[in-house]
Image 1 (tube, helix red, strand yellow):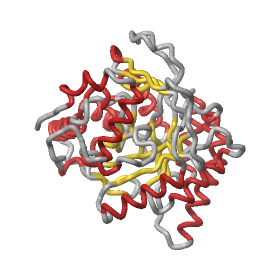
Image 2: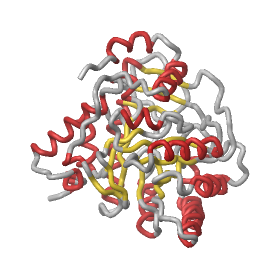
Image 3: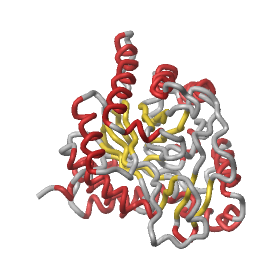
Image 4: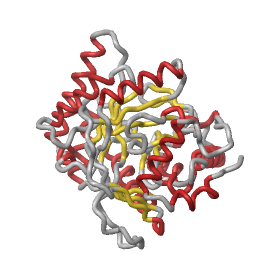
Length: 361
C-alpha cells in the first residue's frame, strides 16, 4: 500500500484550513482518495448494531461532508459507515470566516462553522442520487440533522429534516450538542430533550405506520456534561425508543496542555486533546445505561489503539474526522488492521465481544 498523504501534507497544510477542507471534498467527489489501496475486509470487524449490519465499526463523523457531496469517495477509503451533515431545513451560510483552525502542535482542530449547509432539499437530492448509483450496496449512510440558527421552534426543524429524509438514510443523528449554534445545547436538558425525542419518534412512528421501514434514531451529546446531565440523558434511551447515543461532540473546554497559537479561538475543540475527556464521558454513559444502549464513541481517535480503547470503554462503533487532517486517508485502513489484530490478541472473536470489556469483572 502506498500512502501519498505524507508527500501532499505540506502543500495541503500551507492552504487556509477551510480551503483545504473544501479541496478534499472536491477530490473525493471525483473519486481521488489519495491512497493506492483497496479497502480490506476483516471478518472479526463485522457487527450488527441497532438493526444494521456494519462491515467494520470505523465511521466518518459528521461535520466533514456537510452536504452529502462525497459519500462514494468517503466510503472508498474503507469506512464501515459514513455520517453526513449537519443538515438544517433551510440553507444557511454559517458563521463568518475564519471559522476553522488547525492546532498542529496539538493535533487538534477548532471549528465554529455554525451548521453551514445547502439545506435539506439539496441534501435529500444527493442521498437519492447516491442510492441510485450504488444500487442498494452495503454502504451505511447516516444523516446528522440540526436546527437553523433563526428557528423559532428548533424541535420542529428536527422533525422537518427527519420527515424529508426518511427512507433516504440508514439512520438519523439528532445533533443537540454543537457549541456553534447559540442555545442549541440547552436541548440537552431533560425536559427539552424528552420533548424533542417524543416529537421525532412520532415522525418515525407515522412513517412506519405508512409501511416504511423502521430507521434508527440516535442522539449526539456533548462531552461537557455534569453528573446530573448524564443521569438525565441516560434515562432517555432507556425509557423511549431512541436507538443509541453518540459520545461525543466537540468540547468548549481548553486544556492547559494546548500549545498552539489559536487555542483562544471560540468554537468546538476536536482531535487528540478530546480523546481522554470524551472517552471518560463514554465510560460514564455506558455505566449510566448499564450497557443496554448502543453507543458510538467519537473524539480524538487517531490509531487502532484509540479505537480499541473506545470499544472496551463501551462503544459498539467509533467515528473519526479530525485525525484525517494530520494522518491522512490511509489512517482508516491502518486502524482497521490494528483493531483486528488487537481483538485477536485478546481472544475476542468479534467487536461485539469486546464492547464494554473494561467494565467487566
